[in-house]
Length: 263
Ligand SMILES: [Zn+2]
Image 1 (cartoon, rainbow, N blue to C red):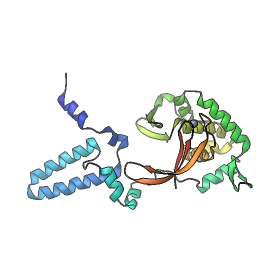
Image 2 (image 1 turned 180 degrees about the horizontal axis):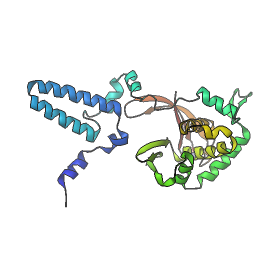
Image 3 (image 1 turned 45 degrees about the vertical axis):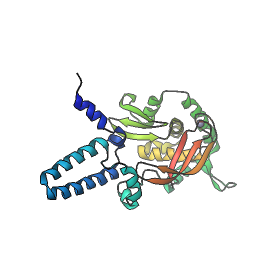
């Protein structure tokens, strides 16, 4: 039996803008537009104002926006400070935070290189990391590796791919995201080594661990999955409703994005 309303609903719905993809600033802006329009119309014809408001809210709920092109409008006109307030600017994690630096130095994972006048990976860790990456890369049991990384049973985890990137989901909630499988392989491998070598690793929260693992990816010179050269560059990334500058690390060979961090 066909249900015309279900087909209609499907046609109107825009999954790319709702659910976990819903953009809060765009939604708020659209609700504000709907409210202003409904009040204006309602002042003349009260019933029409109410109908307009109900239809508009329904459209925002199903489609994520009311005014076509809101994402780019928001990007252009909504002040940065307001987007910050919605947490939109905190999307890229700031790199090289002092505490992470200190943690990596204190645990001996990175050391000062007086010649390069920079921090580098401790050589035995670097070699072990590359070996471990090669091992993880061919395991092809990503859900088991993810379970090990986040400390949850594999049956509770779901991996959702968005192009090369993927998010890890538990009971409908995002618990982590990776730019590519190569980035994930790097994290699984380094987490295994840190677990082995660093006593205080167990005491870090999941969020702190993920920051440490992400920071370690700054030191990658070869791709964890194909051994290609890793290129670092400044890039401009577009999210739904804003642009931001990032440092991006990409593998020259397989094109996997290994890191994207706000600057
Ligand atoms: Zn690669």
